[in-house]
Length: 272
Length: 131
Image 1: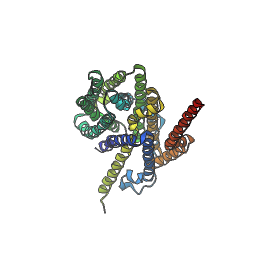
Image 2: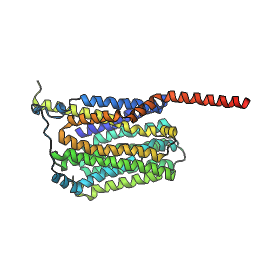
Image 3: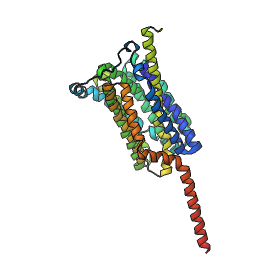
């Protein structure tokens, strides 16, 4: 539940920042908008720095203990973790999911504008997806504890694939911008966004000892970054090469399908 | 006076609230989708270049994940933050960052200057034609 709430911040961030960025761009140009958003990020650094993290993070019962006891992971333990197929399966889930999401997400506003929607509607659709993610993430934690990670993951991937197909249909099937189809596509896509991160986080905390959680989490989260890098770069390249977005959608669909299949193939993910 | 269990719950609540806030702020990077078209038209860059720039941001995010995870396990959350802030200060004090911020601040002045130059050029050309 706690992880769901913290992850919901990711969805709330999109609802907050995307419209702000759009309004700032419309009113004062992208450079000024970028500058102000940069100032907002910089101010965060100060907030993060002054927060009493040690006092907050540690249960108050252990306050007497002032020094942090470093968790020493020996090289052997790291090699054992990295050598397990489960680790690579979890990494693969996030890597492939990130490819599926980031092959489309950065291009979504541009794609919707190219499909005939206005910039404001395109931006609203993008932030609406973020808002839906808020609900999706909040319910995923509860659903996983009730139905298991495999079933919930499969449903969320099916929703992502439905959303992607709906978005693709906007340009392939419709000759004019179709608002209902846009809503129908954004809804499942948004609801499923971010939920896989939560499922993987839950699995990691179940499968690995507390002493290695930070490292395993960091290593697996690297999959999101690398997947995002591959997905975003590849889709941009494909847009330039093909002059359309269909190839990017094909990559996203394949990556989503492959990520889902890992929940059926790998034993720890299947039973987790 | 709070009982130890209540105090622990309160601390956990504060951590959850703060992490929510940090995650909220972390989504600033997602505004790239809104900036894509204006930046594309301003610099006349192709989509592959812009997407690769975003991809690099994502890649750095990924590498940062493992480094910070390792650091938190090793030295704890607050010392890790201190080191990350120190690194950020070093990066932000780099001349490239100064130039980027200056270019964002001065762009109006630059555009105005460019407009003035163009206007003067046109005027000179017109006067030459008259001569």
